Amino acid sequence: MATTELSLSPLDRAGFGLDVRVTLADGAVTDAWVGATRYRGLERALAGRDAQAGLVVTPRLTGAASGAQLQAAALALEAAWRAPVPAGAVALRNIAQAMELLQAVPRQFYGQFAPGLVHPRYAFSRLYDEIAKRFTPGSGRSAQPALALAGRPAEVYALVGGQWPHSAFLIPGGLTGAPTLDTVTRATAILGGWQQQWLEKQLLGCSIDRWLANETWDDVVAWVNEAKAQFDSDLGLWIRYALDIGLDHLGVGPGAFLAVGAFPDPLAAAGAPAGADGRPDLLVTPGGVVTGDGWTPFDAVQVTLDVTHSFYEDSGDAGGGSPWAAAPEPLDPAAAGGDRYSFTPAPRYAVGGTRVAPEVGPLARRLMAAQAVPAADALGSVDHDPLIADIHAKKGPSVFLRQLARLHEAVVYVRLARSWLAGLDLHGPFYAAPEDHLPGRGYGATEAPDGALQHFAVYGGDTISRYRVITPADWNASPRDSADVPGPLEQALVGTPVIDPTDPVELHHIARSFAL
Image 1: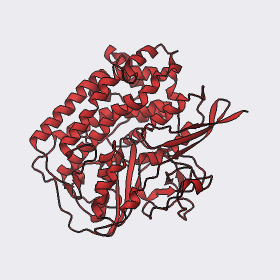
Image 2 (image 1 turned 90 degrees about the vertical axis):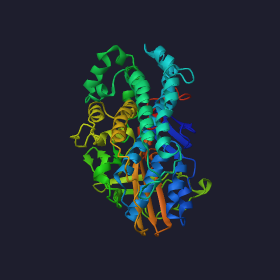
Image 3 (image 1 turned 30 degrees about the vertical axis):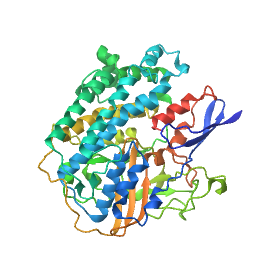
Image 4 (image 1 turned 180 degrees about the vertical axis):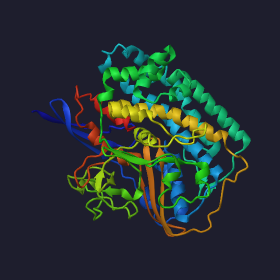
């Protein structure tokens, strides 16, 4: 059996600098190593600074998820200071975060993922010519308007948060200012226009209510063929094409999924300090962990960071150290040893005493949403969503399902955001001053566009003692751990048939499905 090694650097389009090496045997990947080449030292720089410095510094870790970083930083500080947040502030935070999630959907699909669909490899498909007309970078008749309209949700974020990215309108206890009727009216109009122009007219070819009526894979198949507008929509075409070229059999992954949940229920969470557990019972989009043994609720205490194969000094814990512990000293890659290959630690989650390497992202979120109890009210204040879980049960995880879950979320979150806008009480209040700047442990978690985001902090009252951030890329692009278990992307790459090692488009599809 002939084996060869293939190196792809950088593989990602998201700026993480991923160095990917794979071993090929008889035309298929038998092993993979995913290493981040860039050191992130902002958390170490936070030690000793003012307790609120995390609100300013951590959003600079990324542009596309800066709002999620701000949210997690605020939640971490509120947990330590036991600071309650008024219902109006919770609702407006939810609206802003939903906008960040929404703007990312067309940008990721048309800007990062879809260009790979026009690869000449797929010219055999009878749908190829139409795919090329719509999705070719720079000239695609679908890509151009979709990417132009992608900024509309970001405009809404800027209306309620002052700017996007790198907003600073969240502070412990609420917001820096109150919204006005003009703000809500303009935000509603902008979001409604985006929904009609891109989401319904171009992506779906139908109303969001019609799409949300789909609860099973059979429903989706029937939906595609139900009406010409749906059949010819970007989503209808993409579903048909993805199945035709086999994306539903590519990039299975670890089979374990994690989401921390998002969107505190404005009424239930109002006045209730988050605490170190993040109050997962108050979230509209639930968190949890899904493995082969089923679903379990998420518990931040079960998260560890393993640096066995990372460019850091050993933590002293064979199975990984606590995220609340001090960040380990970085090592010079040139002198670190051959078994270390990434600046990303290996986040792991303990399920029944066994540490697993779960993937995070829209697919994980949708699997957790299937566990939510349906809402009794017409506004849908609970994110109950059985569709993606049904497809997962029938077809399994894949590049296709990760991407479908992301597109589906645009429909889910635009509906929730419009309900929060409609129910916003402009009389407030939107801020409640924390009574005491207490020392203690803080934890803030939410869902960024690409998956679970967590801030683990220890405060000395008005100063930061320790600060750690686990990003979605840390989870998905993690290296091996002390038990030599590969990270999620590494596992998803294994088994992939590579037709042309000089142009491995298959590997790129898998990385893009993780938004890398």
